Image (cartoon, rainbow, N blue to C red; front, side):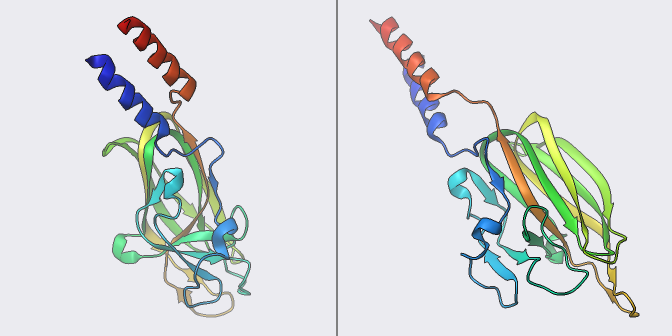
Amino acid sequence: MKSKLLIPTILLSAFAPVADASTVIAFDDIFDSLPPAGFLGLRSFEFNYYSSQGITFDKLYLLFDGGTGNQAEELKGSNGDAYLVVNDASFSFFWGLTFASTISGIQFDIGLSASKTADFTTTAYLQGLQVAQQTFNHGDTDPIGGSWRTVSFSGVDFDSVDVVATNGTGAVIPGLPIVIPFNGYGIDNIQVVPEPSISLLSVFAIFAIVCRRKK
């Protein structure tokens, strides 16, 4: 009886949607295909756009094309001009990803526009339990452009990650006594490494062994 239950379980896991080793989300490739969001350079990004690849965002976001504006303090993406905008203060500037299957590594970039700073906490979870965490301060003192910082998790299995920004400071407009309040951060260049899984060849080999034993 155990072998009869094992085979379907293995087959189902093998065909489940997973992020493959080449999964890189940089947003530029889909930017022009998304509906405008009211302002130049903004697009509305659905949370399940990459669900076919086993990746789901926690809610709807906006994408911004940093190459469309003409303000010196604007941030451009770290991999192309477009990036995801995390600017909802009611959610404590929270951003999260959930994966359809366990992964073993992820890398992504967090960006702040000119003169802004914030404290960041990035956390990885497996079935709701924390398995890794990083805390750091990221800031950009240059009044031109902004900057990116790469964050990564590896060497541990997990199925979701999130980022929270706190203690954010705003940007000073060069030459003017004006400070723009902290209004969030950017996410770009998401690279996912799947957990090593049973290949289809291994599945069929197991199936053949079980069938031979039954004879």
